[in-house]
Image 1 (cartoon, protein in one colour):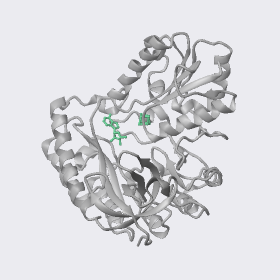
Image 2 (cartoon, protein in one colour; image 1 turned 180 degrees about the horizontal axis):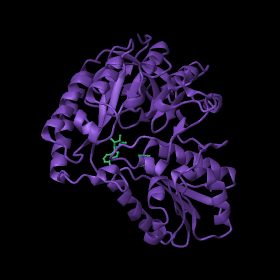
Image 3 (tube, protein in one colour; image 1 turned 135 degrees about the vertical axis):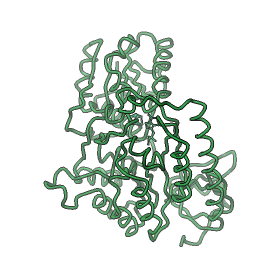
Amino acid sequence: MKRFYIETFGCQMNAHDSEKVIGTLVGRGYEQVATPEAAELIMYNTCSIRDKAEQKVFARLQDFKRHHAGKTFAVLGCVAQQEGEKIFEKAPHVSMVVGSASYNKLPELLVQIERGDKRVTGLSLDTDDTFETPLTRRDNPHKAYITIIEGCDKSCAYCVVPFTRGPERSRTLESVLNEARELIRMGYSEIQLLGQNVNSFRDPAIPGSALGHDFAYLLRRIGELPGLRRVRFTTSHPRDFVKDIVDAIDENPVLCNHIHLPVQSGSTTMLERMQRLYSREEYLRCIEWMHRAKREIAITTDLIVGFPGETEAEFEDTMTLLDEARYESMFIFKYSRRPNTPALRYEDHITEEEKTRRFLILQEKQRAMQIRQNAELLGRVEEVLVEGWNSATSQWIGKTSQNRTLNFVHPAGREANLLGQYAMARVTRTGPSSMGGEAALEPAV
Ligand code: 5AD
Ligand code: SF4
């Protein structure tokens, strides 16, 4: 059994975990294949953030069973951690269940599987280690992910992550910098730093962590590495977000002017019930730092509608927050009950219809704001990293530092060979989410 297929759901942390799992397997002599048909070992990296994501897992496992009887199946990720050995009951064809906090045990577990063991688990959460692999395969040729912190020490009332990814563990600054240097040598010019809460990064190699070896310091150190053009990071938590992060971005254009700062709700009473550890006013203070930055910072967010007991007045507070924050874009989610979470104790649940109504109202308001805000970008010249070619429209697909998509035409068309390069493009058309433009020769201002 040497050929494996892996399928991944969920957030960027999961996508990057899969890259590391692939690196571990390839390092042990396995070969990755593109279809489950060609594989002997089928791995499925799962997400349990909302109920729908979790339901998909068991449907997909049934699928696999129907079409690939006799193969070895492994369930990884957040559903693995959450459901543990129960997965063997619900899906007896599965042989391996490994939670995201136990991937450092993967080599041992693979040995057991090779020996023919039929039920193998890695489910411990009490690891101090982070999951580092010397050899990591990366699927995106332009952008590389680096984990800087794993797990989460918060306890947001709706969230499974503290249960599925365990307590917070930072990597050392030195190992993060070394990985970044290696990626630059491999030809990457854009790096995205990952963690459930990157803002609480503290270098564990420095005793007395109040000494400034924090996230803003890490940003400054990464930003000065020669050869790097763009550094992004996600996700931030408003409670640990400090002005020094905005100052670091202001000082160095390599640090992209885009910040994803999930707010979840614009109402202080709702934020209290969600156990978010900040008020509307405290959140808006972070927004003000960004609005006052020298470089315009694109702000994006996550919002939950229909959390238990959400009143009309609380929902209205979220609506008015949109006017103040002026988001570049947002993800809106309908609240979904999750196992083990503190919010299960609330009883006053909002109906599905009402959640949908609030979802649509928010979505419409944000869409109207995006149309207005994006129209202001007309005529601007932006630097983009070219990530693809759209043959249907004969346009290059570019990403700006603010993470906006800017599709543009070039006089040489496909012959311009821009893939993976930085180019200048002028915005000639804007819509609610993406922009259209043309190649520009003059440098960006
Ligand atoms: N229900 C709905 N949305 C959720 N999120 C996290 N947990 C839940 C839940 N139980 C959303 C939050 C978070 C994003 C990744 O997913 O908005 O920021
Ligand atoms: Fe899904 Fe959260 Fe796990 Fe990411 S950390 S895969 S979003 S449950």
